[in-house]
Structures are given as structure tokens and as C-alpha cells.
Length: 296
Image (cartoon, rainbow, N blue to C red; front, side, top):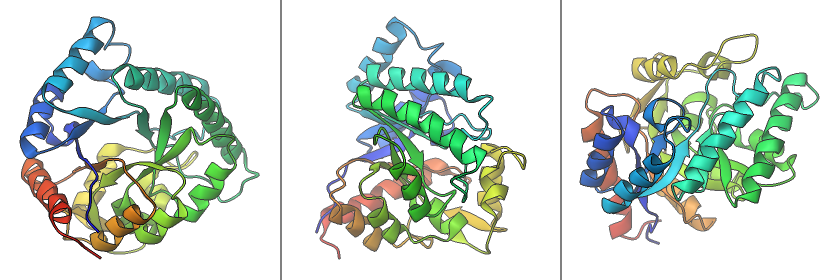
């Protein structure tokens, strides 16, 4: 089989701003881009009116499309019922922006799903995701939960408890390898009915780690992207590495995506490294090598 999926790049990985990031993504050979839309110039409260059309036209003019927006609101995800109403409204506005920009997917972290389905935290997350899922479904769109904080089977059980698939999955194989030690290949098969977007990233797990130390937990710690990046650089518990240099078996992983009929984006994310642009270029070439020749 050959890989036919389009290649995306998270423009924020370049660390040079949205406009320059778009140009770099195009120069690296991307078909599309993912953009953070929580704060700054991409905040839905800032990017309004004609600014949205101008950005959409600029992206189209480069021959790109948006694979997804990132609407990760950090903190404790949707674990805290007291702050969820504001986060839900913000998430809806980000999805509105995505749809206006011609995209139907917003990726996010919702917090670690508790083991106990009868806990108040589980109930708070379930209620928030139910509301978001119904909202997304009405727009033929998705909020996509990023894999990593919990095993795939547990995430599937949570998603199965919702009334729609408006909340689905952004599959990140490296997060699974680095944090839970879960098998990405089996994870694809387990979550096959929910995968609407993927990240392409590689990593190594050097020792077992408590997911709460990485992603936070209500009453324990809040999720901090800067802290996660520092952990991924240190290698103390896990390390994010360039594609093909870690523990993700991409031959088997890509084959699993093909097996389930996934036709969406493979979006490159590079959160660490001294030269992310060079790593991204190599990642594009790495993925393209699976396009050029049959595998598995």
C-alpha cells in the first residue's frame, strides 16, 4: 500500500508568527496547516470581520488549506465544572472561526479522563463534552481530543458515553509512546470510529511517568505547555525526537491508518529542538517516502 494522506504542519512550531509560519509551511512542502487559535492575533475575539476573509484568502493564495485549528485552553481542561461554562463558550467561538475559515476540526486537550466514571470530575468532563459535541455535530464539525493522557481503550469508553461523535479524536502516536506507554497501532484500531485528525510526531519513553505530572489534574496541578515542552526536551522521563528516531513504528502506524480508511491529514508537530524548521523539513521528506513507495 501507499500513503495518500495530505501533509500538514503546525505553523506555530516554527516560532515565527502566523504569516511567516504559513510561508515556511508552504516552502517545506505542506498541503495544509494547523494554527493555534486561543490567543493573540488568532483569538476569535481579535480575528473578526474582514480579517477572517483576508486570512482565508491568504492561505488559499499560498495553495494551502487549514487541516485544523488548535483550541487547547490548557489549565485543567474540562475537569472543573465551575469554570467550564466560560471554556465551553470560548471553544464554541473557536469552532465558529474554524468553520468560517473553511475548516471543520478544532483539536484540544480535555484533561485526563478519570478511571471512575461515577466521579464528579468525570461527570464535569462528560457534561462539557456532550454540549460541545452536540454543538459541533450541528455544524458538521468536530472537537478532536488529543491522545496521550489516558490509554486508548479508556478514551474510547468515554467517547462512547456521549450522544454524538461531535467530540472525536486527534491521534498523536508519540504522546501515547512517551506518557502512557500505550501501543499507537492498537490505539488506531481501538479508536478507529473517532479519528478525524492526526499529529505526526515521534518520541522515546525513558521511564514510567504519572500522566498527572505531564498533563495536570484538578487538585494536583494545571497543564502547562511550556513545562511539557521542557520535559520532552530533557529526556528525564520521555523525549520528543525527530521522525523515525523514536519508538513509534511508522510503517505499522501508517498501515493501521490505511487499514481503518483514515483519509485525513498527517500534521507535523515539532515542539522542541534547536532547529525545528530543519526537523520539519526532514519530517515532510520522511512522510513523502511512504507516498513514493509501497510499504507493509
